[in-house]
Length: 350
Image 1: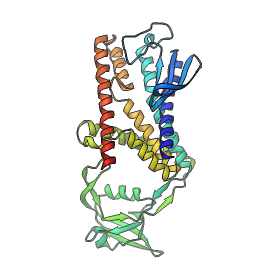
Image 2: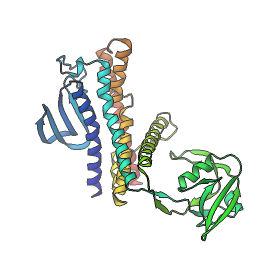
Image 3: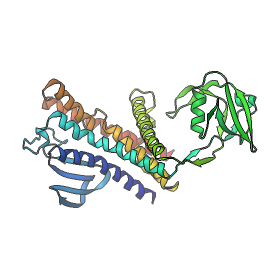
Image 4: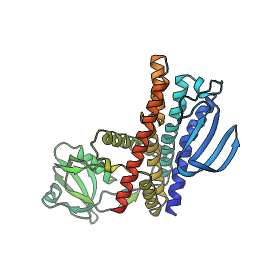
């Protein structure tokens, strides 16, 4: 069941990505010859709106083939009025960027649905207190609930952690203990911690861990929109940062995951409920949007790069350069996919 849900989620995200290209291409007057979900042998095809709509055997990607565009051979061109090749660089960039844009829009929509469903968040309830830490010295204890810091109301663990991390000097905490409110005063200490990328960073902390208690967020209409916007921006920033850190060697290449990781994580999310599936689908959608914007010739970002060159210098890159860069792009792309698959197998074996 989990694997089936994984494939359905991945196929749906790819469909929306390619739908962005398709709609933008038709808006620009470009004929779309093939709209395929998956690669390899087609096992279901029908024709509508002068386009062949296909579902292929390998459900690990998809493509929209426009008239005059062939990534396998960039020299194959058509100069008919409904061809991709006769469009201006700005029109081409609009078509290319529409795919990733649809992924970000879909992620926003999924986060919006999640917000309507009152997602569970971690409550500011203390689980354990580290001995000799600021919290220990101030008299905080397990099961205490932090209700405010320096007069600012606290409803989630995340809010509490952010205020502590960004604080300056002494903090005044109001805690709830056995139905009574108590005041505690302490000063956070700068300590080593691990961020989401596994890097050791300095962070102000008070020496507590969460009890694991959760509560549901009840959001108004404006708060729902704010939640969806915040989560989409956060996910995008996180993935952009992660890619940058991988490229510059700040995060080891062994952290890169592939299709197996996606399937496994989606399967795990399925076991945790549909809300988890929506969270993970939104994250993968943002991931697809970000990765497709990378300036690799085999991806949308690479094509955007060529069109920006033409827009700036008023001439196309030479066919020889485009062919070489496209081949290099496919090598890089397959290399990354291979590395991700290798890491996935190592994790499974480990």
